[in-house]
Length: 76
Image 1 (cartoon, rainbow, N blue to C red):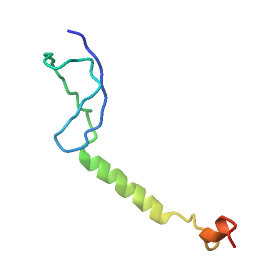
Image 2: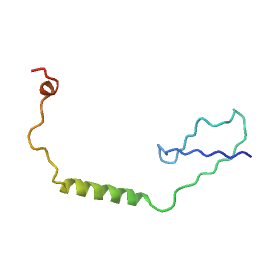
Image 3: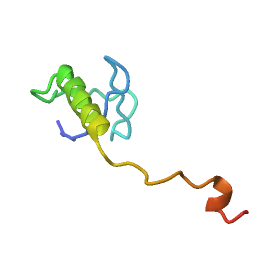
Image 4: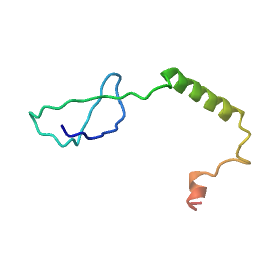
């Protein structure tokens, strides 16, 4: 049996869609799904919280008001 490697992203919980495979209708195939080890979903949420905490603590701010659309495009 020929092996090919396809990496994709799960878009809906519990569903995996594969396309552009070198197969024809009626071909018998075997699929093996390897899940990455470590990093449970709670790690993703923890990373998001750390990011938001750092963003809120950031001192980076605009020095003044933002220009209007007309000012940006010399329409005045």
